[in-house]
Amino acid sequence: MGEGSVGNDGHRGGYGDGYAVRAEGLEKRYGEKRALDGFDLAVREGTVHGLLGPNGAGKTTAVRILSTLIKLDGGRATVAGLDVARDPREVRARIGLTGQYAAVDEVLTGRQNLEMFGRLFHLGGRRAKLRATELLEQFDLTDAADKGVGKYSGGMRRRLDLAASMILAPAVLFLDEPTTGLDPRSRGEVWESVRALVASGTTVLLTTQYLEEADKLASQITVIDQGRAIADDTPDGLKNLVGGDRIEVVVAERSDIPRVVKVIARVSDGEPEADEEELRVHAPVTDRVSALTEVARTLQDDGVQVEDIGLRRPSLDDVFLRLTGHRTEPAGDGRSGGGKSGDGKSAASAKSASSAESAEKEAVV
Image (cartoon, rainbow, N blue to C red; front, top):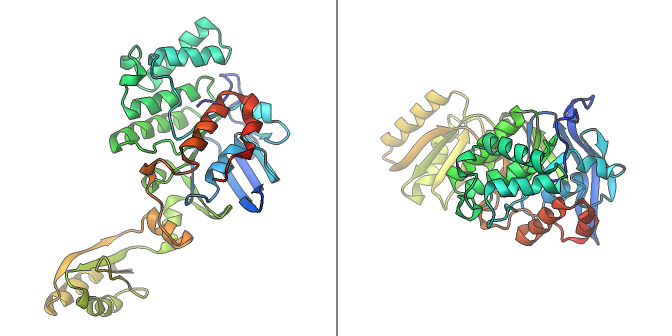
């Protein structure tokens, strides 16, 4: 839920070096376990920066340190130009935090929820009502403003949760797995809201296991594994690590795979890779059209029964597999990041800055 943040009083922007979030050599230990082991991060002001990694890589731990919910054991981090270790209260006055699960009251209406949070942030009754009206319009919830949140769709709940995080217009918003468990339509609604926030000047650090989400929203992505940043680039830059276009052939019979490998090897720029379970062979190519034509013609002449053939660009899933050695876990299982109980604590801690230190003993995520 929304961390204490400031209103339109000049706290946004102007960090000198152009970065809203910086982390250098962050360390966090739980006994002998290193949740973060020299983690580095640099998030440009006014952008969406994706933070990707497998379960247990350290994503949520990094977010909790940057949002002052837990203390770092080593390294240095600044958010909105302030040191998170030296000035945690000032940092909390400039950030918002939304966890995996919407922390709004389903008994109240959307308007009542936002007015309640406005009062909790000491806006006063009149100003809280005005701010609630502004946010309901901004997040396209005006028509449902006076309906009970229990009747909202998943996407509407998440947008209301985002709106509550923006009560005081934070300079930096941390979104930790914001669309976990949502259907595609609801995810799209949340994406539009995030884009609108960035257009209004907010910097967003997004952790997600939906690679499509990072691809669509983030201008820069950091991949974290075993507590360290192992790659940092634009989505296209990361895809180029895997290579350019790839030709892919799916055959009907496993016995044809060796023949397909030989045919593709003649036109590819690298050794073809075969997946015998999926009956698939693929390899990078430069001259995409001629390569596809040559392979299709040769396989047809050889009498190989092809189920599918085509060209495709590498996906972020390919990048993730190349960098970490495995694909992402299903993001809809509700356990991504810190799991339900962990994120419940995160949301509760975010509502009350005084409880930040109590989160320090939470399990590694």
